[in-house]
Image (cartoon, rainbow, N blue to C red; front, top):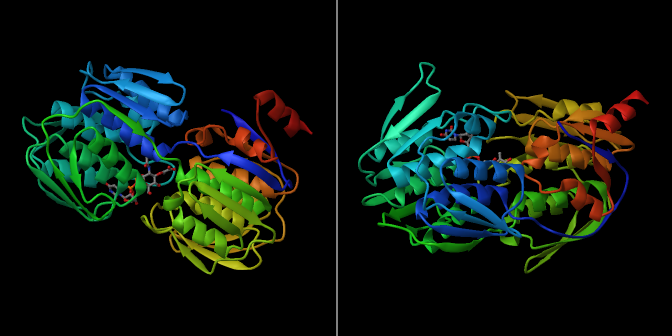
Length: 432
Ligand code: EPU
């Protein structure tokens, strides 16, 4: 397990390019199974979750290679319909192979992903939807941990989602593109990462209408073809680095930023006092003052404020000049950082079944030894560490590497004193 050490107190200044998007790349990588040919995915981030999805592609019989930041997938030879059990346990997003493999082979065996550190995360919407598309389901183990889905014909249908689930919307689309007839999704997720998988599939020959709206119509086609596709930049990485400026002061320019996907983040960061200018794909951000509190902020599906930015915002609000409230309305366990932030001197209370957090801003945080419980929570502790006085060590930093190509390298470019530390260095520090 790796750790990150941060010596806080530096103002961040400089320019940084934003990496390709994790949550756009993952469903598109799964979708490459469907075109039975070559997909070239440009601007693909080199992060652990992507490497993991590639490993699964190879186990399914695909060939993959890299040319600079372009991932090339040849899925013509794929023949395995069973997703390795440990793969799904290691990474929840491998559930996106459910729709892709089913769509191509009319059969898939996949482990039930179960909960994860941010919440229960069921897949009932995914399974209910495919059942409506003439797919049968059986559990292969007594504990119902392995699902076998099979059919001789996938037939389009009308699907109503109880909640606009990102993963369920993507899985239904993947199941539907090569199906017979028309699939309509009502209350579909509108996240940019859903649009992205639609764009990839449309470029490969799929017929999908209504992308970016809550009503999607997918008209099944016979086959897809080779495609070159440019993945968007990561809106959450951009938001994380902007939050680092908000918490520490300083000024930065972020290039290749996905401006149109950052509306709610930019709005909230302006509310905490940041000065932000945007032009084409550049964001200029500065903050000269102590952050301002936010009366109430609730996480919501897109275009609302993203749950994936909630922890980073909390780190800023720990230092705000007043009291703020956050309501986490998407995942039930996304306040695991609270104890770590308290170790750093933050004053936070959590109430209402862990959904509501009250943050009473303090004038400073101090360094501490903390733990990254999940990807975004870990990134948020990096932000708190950058703003704190003294040394912070963030243990189990591997979870941060799942989504950030090089968080230490990036923030160092802005002048932060941050680096990955080995077990030896870590123990040395702890002995002092
Ligand atoms: N839900 C159900 N049943 C389902 C599916 C979802 O009850 O069958 C519930 C979930 O438990 C949750 C809500 O619906 O309470 C929304 O979950 P959703 O399905 O939208 O989330 P996801 O597809 O599992 C993706 C991102 C997450 C991001 C969420 C919300 C990827 C790979 N993951 O997850 O990203 O937080 O959408 O925007 O795209 C991250 O990047 O750190 C991350 C966790």
